[in-house]
Length: 128
Image (cartoon, rainbow, N blue to C red; front, top):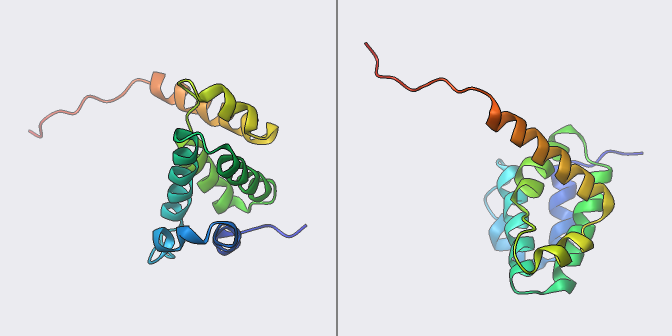
């Protein structure tokens, strides 16, 4: 099985959603920005209850996630899944449309972030 990379992500997303071309333009050197733009697009679909678009988004993300190489997998965790929220009146429906593998990945990244938030932090002090 061939692993997918950022160019594969860009190609797949733009084939399905050519309207994202402008949002992706100029960020080939910063692919996390493109993944975050896709997350914002997905969230916007949820926000307007455009369930057809939302479901198409999460299906593409699921296909990519299943075969993602390390860097793309990381970007899908931190620039996509971390930015999806399931609060509010549309949250349960959005969650039900999220494929099970992405639900599991969302839970993993959320738990990881919760653990990190509990770690003691160094206090920022003034330099002497």
